[in-house]
Amino acid sequence: MILLSALCLLAGSCYKDLSTPADHEIPDIVVTGLAPEIHVTYGEELDITVQVSQEGRTASDFDLVWSIDLNPDRQADRIEELETGPTLHYKVANRPADSPYILRLDVTDPRTGLTKVVYSKLYVASSLGEGLLVAYTRDGGKTSEFDFFANEYVTYGYESEETLFTREIYRLANENTFEGKVLSMAAIVDSDGASYNEMRILAGTDDHLFALDPLTFKQTAADAALFNSSIQSEFGTTAIFNFASYQTGALIGGRLFVMPTLMDRVFSAASFPLEPRNVMHAHNSAWAAFQGGNFAFFDEVHARFFLIYGWSAHQGAFEEISSAPLGFSVQGAKCIGTGEMRGKSLAFLLCDATGTYHVCIIGDMDTAPRMSPVTIPQTALDEAVSVAFCDNCDLMYYATPDELYVTLLAAGRVSNRKVNWAPDSPDERITSIRQYTQGFKGTHNYAIDWYPYPIATNRLQMIITTYNDKTGEGKVYLRPFNVSTGLFTAKDNGTYGGFGEITALCPTLR
Image 1 (cartoon, rainbow, N blue to C red):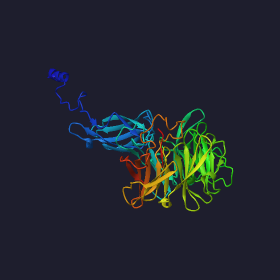
Image 2: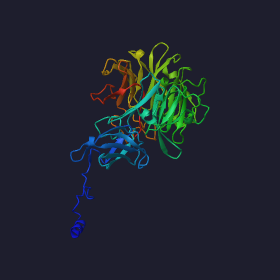
Image 3: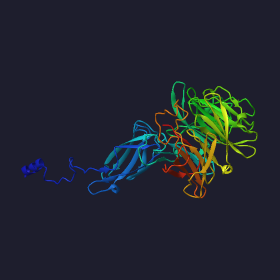
């Protein structure tokens, strides 16, 4: 009996072992649907659904928790519970960076407490490369928002057939609303004096001038911080533009302020010889953005034309241009629209005191300015809401709320005709028109004829904006035109909606 007991102890088989053997294999939790690398753009909606399985079990049998880094390659700084469940909806607010963020999914088996972790490297690129930035309001101008879109018609090297939209960029970046109605925008590159090394979006309202980071759209500076003197106290901004290859101009409080971007990051007031000095407004100013391009405007208060040379605008003074060659009195004239024309010329559409319309052309901008007029048949000009000249041809477009016209100005001859185009809905009214030019124009010392990244549509399509009061939707139409006739071609470069009432837009930089 003693021997039998001893044998039982040695064999260990007299008692049933109810514990789990140490080498028992637990079936693997299989997770599919999460790519090892994900490439997105800032502001993009990320939608991912994973499948989880383990010998007949599904995702509903596990606890799933998503998390993400807040800084690239820093797992200690993260949102620990971004979302739960097999589906992730996430609007990417991570700052664009060369290094990846880590998107993590923890899959926990509640029966065993065991967790399987899967990762994806999330690369975030800037959505605000080259494209079209649209500012709009949905509350009559109390606040504004910004949308961006990129496609083959506004973006160099764009390969996808789908248009990329990034909506409500300001709210995403700043977690609040942009106060005021945006009246003008421009993408600029400026310098600390050594090299062009800072890109910014400038946006102006009736009360303020803002600088925004073009990658994240966070506000970086405003008002006095953008000027070299704190004496400036009012910042109502009606126009922002690049000209003369290295100058950024802004019309603020009716005065011209200039930033020489090759050496500075702040504005200074240009010198004007007469009082009052605040005589410039968005509708009666024009500028050239060629090498050595100049800025000119018609002063309705003093009934005179003035010009300042672009290369010295930050330190020079305005000079008067005689209007005598025009052959009609400019006393009491109103400026309806302005722009550039072929041959580095600036054009002004004036309505004189008799109600007659004239296009006044300032030519020979590289030498002594030369004035010449063209009288325009009235047609529907009394109802015009927007005017657009073309810098590569002799065309002037103008729009009424319902119709679009083109005027050919060549060798003193004038032909005026209605363009066969209309918005999608009769409830839409035309709010603005402009010739599309790439964002580089007037910056980086790039002449328009030898910019290394030209889009086939550059200077060859019109941007038309509309607004529908009934639906509250604003639209952007891109329509290519013939430079000889001004008529639209058969090709359609797209219609883009989903905006509020569009108040400003600008091409962004590559």
